[in-house]
Length: 132
Ligand SMILES: [Zn+2]
Ligand SMILES: [Zn+2]
Image (cartoon, rainbow, N blue to C red; front, side, top):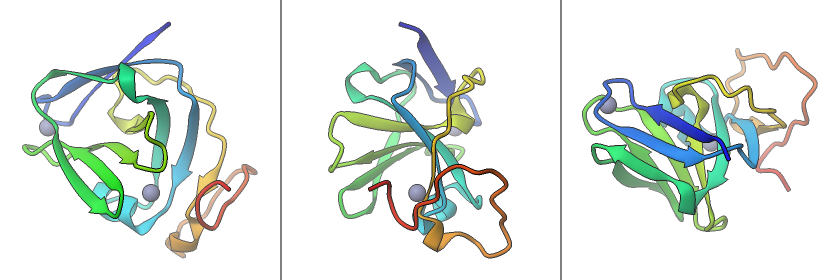
């Protein structure tokens, strides 16, 4: 089982998780946009039980009902997403991984929140909200 590692922008936080990912998608929800300061976030889903912080301490905050996001309190990097509806999962921002893992991105989700000036340029399935 390949170990996937990642870190925040400033390097205060490093983490590891067992790969490969279970799912990966692009999310356009307003929360992700504001948390990341970006029009879209690419997330990959891993087993929560295999996720370990190996350096520093993640700051956890509840961004909406049942949702916990993990950020670096020093640099603000938004790294993780957990939803109580998927208790065994943790989603990691692909942008925070050390090596490009070339995951198979499978969908665009929450496109009802997508910025009108952002154009999707592929043929992946599009979901107005989450994957049904
Ligand atoms: Zn940091
Ligand atoms: Zn989102």
